[in-house]
Image: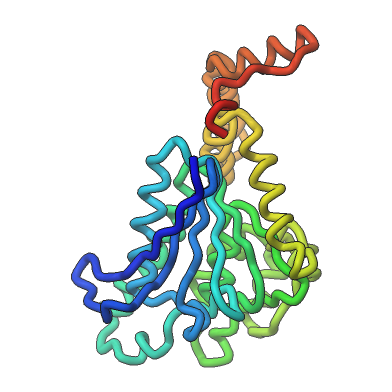
Length: 280
């Protein structure tokens, strides 16, 4: 498949932004889809329009079996500065805020629910809901100058929704310290804490993300999609129920044609002949 690039303009679900308000872009290179946040002047703040566009695009990708990996990137100097505070200040009721945070949570949960792994490609700062977005992605690679914080507490607003993925990625005390101090964490510290997977030089970020994508694309699709679903479901279970679900999942996985080909190839000491190789 040839590479494509499509601008996404917000304007659905009752939203009426200016006609030139491009909030994100979508590009495609074979089995890898890249979503790029495109509000650089606002440090890619998550406006309602952007949240709506992201959710719709992620849902569309989730239903496209030809996409094997998704990269979440950003334009400009920052990855994402969290919610759009100008938009928030213009809201008039608690109901408006509940709708906003529900829209954000819906987008975040779409990432976790889709079968493809989502990789955050982080440069610059990732704060508040932007740090939450990094934590919700399945994997994350950051440039060395990237910084992370949940700094709402500095404004009197505890980052409640970011606390959900942070408490599930970092240790409890590390997550709580970030939440109650609002202090920044550099990329190396974020890696040690478990928020991101790799730290690379800025000029190596593209290559590092591409290599990780190709490592995933080279694996059988059924194993990746089944494994992602199982991984998150079992985290919320007691250990006995988790083992039961894991055993059932492996049994279903084992009867898949791609899995049987992989196991047969290993036993026969040959390279597997994946049906997906033609399209990857």
